[in-house]
Each structure stands twice: as structure tokens, then as C-alpha cells.
Length: 325
Image: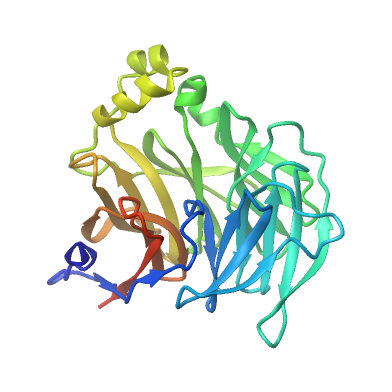
């Protein structure tokens, strides 16, 4: 399987280089929503209401959440902000954020809790800092409507967007699984990228969530969903799972540097494969060849993505770096 991890792209601008895998010590966790720093991997432990901290050799180094005065109840999303050396944990039970700061010696200290006015069923995805004045993130106002939002430093919502441009998709309720966001800094300044799981169209926003343009990233072999069938089975999980083999789906978008972003797709060629393609943030054009693997991209740090082997019974992460040649 390791051979799938490395594809040398001759006469291209981008290569993908595999690093030694990381085997985490715990196998009873969900690794789809993790965050990565230069030294650590943060994984939520819903059953024990905590966040586990691993080093890059896969060893468990600490547990966060037990030491707080208002104990973490239901960790939903962990967001490491490298520039601030802070970990933001969204608690789906209290609908607030708990924040830890990394000390000079590498340990973590709980610093504060940000209560919010978020309503019932409000969920927040991976946080993206905006020029040190606030945050953006994919959110759901209810569990059936996914969009993106901008918040100030205290997590007061400033604006929601994106659903206006995608009414046809948002009306499909449970079928629309997720929205994804990334940040780049092309020539025009700081930009937010948003994409929804059933539409290979990247919406480009400024930091106020004003739409600037749209980038089509439909890859070869993309299969549009049959909307009529999706509506019919949208509330039947078993039938919906069967139907997934008939259409493609976006699974990730990450900003790799100021001018490069990566998009991941499911079922472009086969149901058990994922395809990843880099794009130029200025032009929207593909850069290099696509990278095809059986692994799911679950986090990134700068130009290194962390891929999960979902078929394995072991919690294996594969760091793969995008290298400009």
C-alpha cells in the first residue's frame, strides 16, 4: 500500500513525497477530525470528554480537558493555530470554545473558555484565523444546512454566506454532508475558499465573505449526483450509502501556501480511492498531476498533509508533503 503514497511527477511543478508513517498508540478513537502542529497531533476523545495529544512518533504525551473548571463535555472539532500556539476546542454540548496555550517547555495550559450565543445544533468546523481580528469556519446553523461563517475574536457571528449561492444544494438537507474552507493569500490579498461536498466549484471570498469569483475544479471522471434519487433516499442512511457509489464527492480543501491549494475527491475513478489535485490560487488552474491513493486527508500543516488509512484497523497517519520543483 505504501507504493500508493508516492507519485513522482516528471516535468511538473509539483511532487508528492511520502514520509515515514505515524502509528498512534490509541486505536479506539475517531481520527476524521484532528489538528496538527509542528510537534503534536491533537485527537478528540468523545467517550472520555477530552483531547489527546500525541507527538509525531505516535506516543501519547498528555490529555486535555480534565483539568478545566468547566470540564469539556463533547469535543467536536479541534483547531490548532500555529501562529498563536493555541488549541481551540469546540464543545458541541455547551456550544462554546475551550482554549489551551502551549508553554515554552512544550506543555499545554488551559487559558480560557469562550461562551457563545450559538443555538441548538450549531456546529463549527476547523477554525481559520483572519488577520488576527477574527475567525472563519464551515458551520451548520442546524444539522441540515451547511454554510460558512465569519466571527469576531469573541465568536460573535458577523456574517454567514455561501448558502445564497447554493440554494439548490442546501435544500437537499441531509444529503449535503459538509462545507469545507481554506485560506490563501494570492496577489489580491487574503482570500477564503469554500466548497461543498457535492459541487466541485470553489467560491472565492474576501475576509468579509463577499464573493469575488468562482473556480471550477471538476476533475476528469467527476460524476454529478442524481438529485432526484438523492432527495428520495436522503433520510434513509442505508440507501444513501448504497447510492454513494454512483456519484463523486469533495472530501477536503486545504491551503498549502499563499498561492497553492489542494482539493480531495471521492469516487473519481473507483469507490475505494481518493484523488487529490493542487491548484494555483491566482489562476485556478491545476498544478502538477493528480495524486491518487486509498487514504483520506484529515489535516495539514503548511505543505504537509496527514492522510488516514481508513481500511486499516490500526490508527495510521501518513504525512505526505507537496514539494515545488
